[in-house]
Amino acid sequence: MITIGYTQLLPELSGVLQVPRQSTAAKQPCDKILEAGAGAIAPVRFSLVVPTYNESHNLERIVALLSERLDAVLPNRYEIIVVDDNSPDRTWQLAETLTARYPHLRVMRRQQERGLSTAVIRGWQAAQGDVLGVIDGDLQHPPDVLQLLLDAIAQGADLAVASRNVDGGGVSTWSAMRRFLSRGAQLLGLILLPGVVSRVSDPMSGYFVVRRSAIADRSLHPLGYKILLEVLGRGKIDEITEVGYVFQEREAGESKVTWKQYRDYIRHLVRLRISLGRLGRFSQRLNFPVGRFVRFAFVGLSGLAVDMGLLYLLHGRLGFGLTRSAIVAAELAIINNFFWNDRWTFGDLAQQQQQRHQVIKRFAKFNLICLMGLMLKILLLNLLFNGLHLNAYLANLLAIAAVTLWNFWINLKLSWRITQVK
Image (cartoon, rainbow, N blue to C red):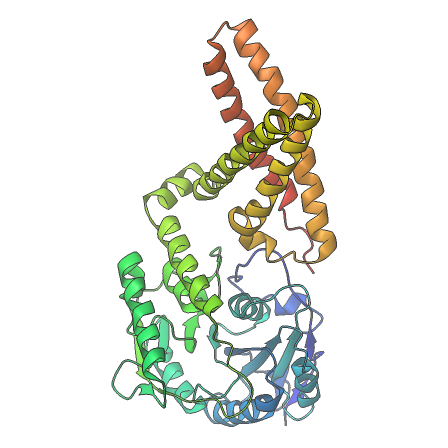
């Protein structure tokens, strides 16, 4: 007889996207304690995350199928974690009601963050198993393949991937266009990131199992839906096994595949390419985010263009006073810089803080830091020109470089800092 001693609803997690080396379950109020027989504890071996959004039509069936398969393979030593992005169809609420029938089911309702990849990582952060997995909640991934994936891990693999492109794999009724886009995306990955994408036949698979130790304590920066790319690129993955499966068409609900997902895929490839290349290795040696700083500098150049262009328009063409024109131009340049930094330079951090008051707070801090930077620039310019007698243009260039570093570092540590960890 199995006794469950924990609260079913998991707290929403935030903060750094990093899977702990050991389960933090013992520190959480939602501990899962499986007691078998006369008090013997059966620790959770496998944690399977099911990210959902508007999957109420499929949820009950997928939970039933997964429970049936895992009861046969790992009786009392698994957990299923549904991570729902606050679905309008209240998928999270249905999942909560199912915990009475399925004692191995746990539920996390996310109201602050969005996105499949981050949902998977948040689920892994709350997981107790030393083997972690992910499967879609739309019944397009056949649960029967789970046993083969777990067998591969038991035989020594660090990562076991369900693939559509090996023996036994395929797609059911995809159109020619969808097949073309899928193959084109894989080819693009091979061009931009050959060392990562070439390691598996189906790098865009969202159905796989991985050892916790292979990704533990690694800073993850996913973008979009393709979490496997992040695991392959940043994890310590030595041995990989692939298992064929046939991708099924949806029976209910709507597809989440949009052009935005293809765009995010390309951005993710570029981000990984930069971070895993020479620039990324140089950044790690310096312990300084060089890639992020380069993006910040490019945004700064766009702000300079906005500032100069508006000053010319307001003062030179429309005849407004110089001081008033300069103030308006500077503030609009700051707004431009904030927008692009929030979307691009610090986009991964901003995605974790999307509430209106958090955005306003970041903008206010950014404005204040830029104002302080302007004052610092004037002081440095005077010191270099009047004190050290450098050429005026060289002194101005050095002052701008110093202030750019100042603005970047202080904004990284204050404006886009993530502190609200629940």
